[in-house]
Amino acid sequence: MSDRRRDAIAILAIIAVAIVVRAIHLIGIVRSPTFDVPIVDAETYHSLAVGLADGDGVRAGFFWQGTFYPTFLGAVYAVVGPSMLWAKVIQLAVGTATCVSTFALGRRLFGRRIGVCAALVTALYGPLIFFETELVATTWVTFFEVNLVILVLRVKDRPTPARAIVLGACAALAVLCWSLFLPFLLASAGW
Image (cartoon, rainbow, N blue to C red; front, side, top):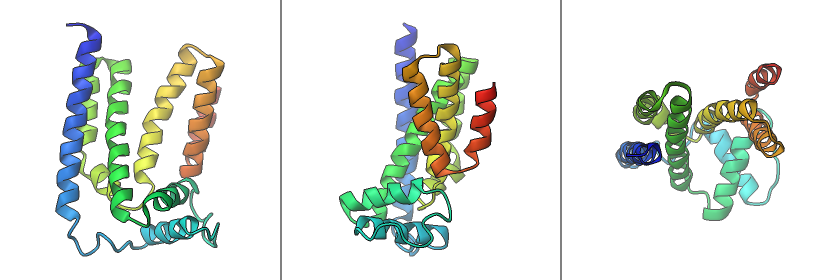
């Protein structure tokens, strides 16, 4: 069996595990009394996003944390209405993509077996799954963490303008999501 075929099978298995576990969790919490009642940070993000989706623009508090997440949430609400369920389903899909990226990073650095193990740990890690169903930026922070490392390694291996642009765009979104990415990016630029 070719390496590409083995990788494809591994990726499909990782996606299946991630989706099943996330679907079970979502079904289990959808009737929770707090499912549709965001609190603390989630409430702030939700209200900012509703304002953006309604065309109210940027309101007070928009810049109190990274601006990527309320903007993302506002875009979701603009398309499907202020549906926390849809926002959470999209975040579960982003979490599943993070599992696949974790496989890619692990495979690149340590081989296929380690990549599969790392991806399965990511797919089954309870706190990640929990935060993927909360209206907070954690899902996106994790997604950017893994993918920034992959992009930095690709640019280091073979620097091209296209790769640099993709890395720059991803880095900008990551910093807008969580400002603590900036020291990592500065260190990786020096590296």
